[in-house]
Image 1 (cartoon, helix red, strand yellow):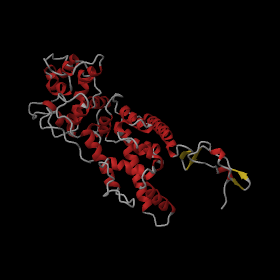
Image 2 (cartoon, helix red, strand yellow):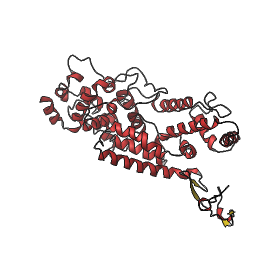
Image 3 (cartoon, helix red, strand yellow):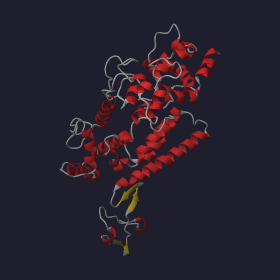
Image 4 (tube, one colour):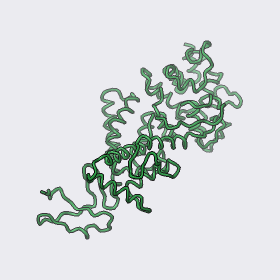
Length: 410
């Protein structure tokens, strides 16, 4: 076997001074000792192992996003939100997560992935919030659900499980399969922390502390779809299950989730929270909000609608929550109608405020006399109402009340 000396280096893992332990020569030439080495596009560090790729992945993601935005701008489609999200999934995600089958274990450690401090997760969240024009403080789970996406941990888990399945499907005696079976055997020894143990640890976490036997068999055989369904079911239930039923009386902690889940994405409750606690979503896949996939909606209208849906608007219910000193919820009243006790929130502005009743008549398809009484859930989940609703919300948020009356009267 011919060895290319110029391409060969020595790496000693888990050692404070690897240079002192390596003395390897080929054809009379001593090979250099490296602390960092790139192999097939994946970086290895003598102490951090493949975890060294996390920073590299974030950098690749930022670069790919910048290239994508530049191309969209050149093609004059930079305001097409749905296209940007699709291209992100098709182009940016594969670039950012290249080799995550090896280094993705570092992405599996966090048990609350939506708030993970891992740099790729931050890049992922920032892209979604920027593309949908949300505030940086917008709840991460609300942002993910609006975009029909998940934290990067889900994609890493998917790719690692598929990799495991592919390796175990190899013929007996294949070196990759032998190595994987050794890894699985070592992981079953108490205290051994390796690739397989990190993978099975996350699956145990989302399955009540026990590795799911029906999805992960003792020999390592894996049912990828069942494992992913466990992850979705756990986080859907943890985040969206057992929420309060009424956003107006819900505890301050988590009220953004209650508002979004009850009024804008559907639940078992009506607009007034009747019917008991909000149900969670099971293990169904998320889809982007109807307004994102709808056609022929002006960009400014779409942005306004997304802002209202995701608590990124300027209504008192949101703005005075972050005032200093903080204003109690009961005091965030409507500045338009001055109705005693009327909160300046999404429900009041869209359906209740008498001061803009004339403006509502401008949209008979939404509020006309021949239309059955609407509730927030019906309005914001009916795909046929997206365009007029986006126009109404845009005028509601981006104009003053007097201007809104002028628009309505004309």
